[in-house]
Length: 283
Image (cartoon, rainbow, N blue to C red):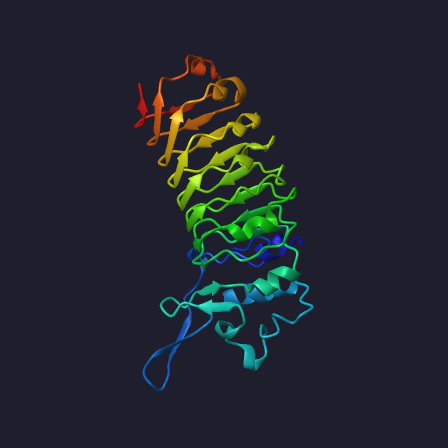
């Protein structure tokens, strides 16, 4: 379902599924009800963006039947799966799991919103998922459904996600970018991250990962960026970083607990432009 062009022709900040960035939205309409409180009506341009999104959905189960332009449906803040902020009037889109089960979205880009709560189940045939700069929380166990051969791009950075990252990525052999930066993930880095021959970027800074680097990462010979700064990783710097990862441009292990000496062969990383091993226990 390719609807990116249609959305941008109408001036909405929408990419394939829906992006509602507060940076480009107008003020909403407020009214005072009998008890003196303010009532928010949804913003017209946000409402139109949702309706255009609905046009691209095959809704066999009438999950979005409350979305419309009829008189009794004019306030989109009352639509199913939609909530509006009492403070700003902006829409907080909380699409129900049941909708996502029946709709195929090869690409979902919901970055830079105020979406919160756990990440719902997503369609199996996802090729790209960007949920960065939101307030999603809890674990990402639900993402097992998209850890398939279709997935090539995963960005969950700048959220409030936590817990261990499940080690179920063996089927996602075409992943090129993994970005989990600025969350509260803990535990060890999944071994199955290393079975990605096409992986270019592994971005995991500002989390609480522990343990040694999984040796399986030596299989990712196309890696250009590894950033694992500000975690709690430990162990010696493995020699395979030099012998196997010849394409590295950025290698950042700053503020961890690595120890031992720097492998002499690191001077042979000819393509590397950034090498940061500061604030470890390296001698």
